Image 1 (tube, one colour):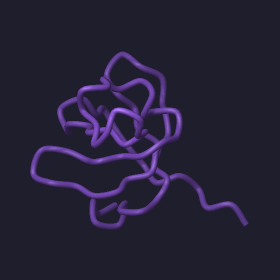
Image 2 (cartoon, one colour; image 1 turned 90 degrees about the horizontal axis):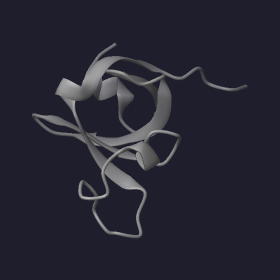
Image 3 (cartoon, helix red, strand yellow; image 1 turned 60 degrees about the horizontal axis):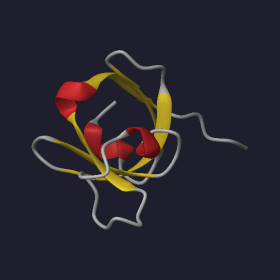
Image 4 (cartoon, rainbow, N blue to C red; image 1 turned 45 degrees about the vertical axis):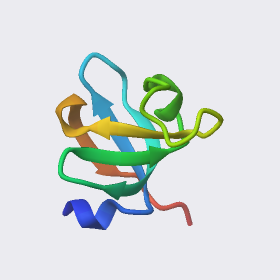
Length: 74
């Protein structure tokens, strides 16, 4: 799946040494993704966020083992 197809979608992330977790991809840049909420955001460092009270976090590509779009619920 193309990275652009993941924007504004719920995505399942497998990070090295962790169980798969989900989050919504807000945008991407050359080194990673800005993600919001889900089960992944609370697991990432507070320093990589847009605001201290926000659940928006930055996730570097190097931390990702694999990822896939979550199934759409009908």
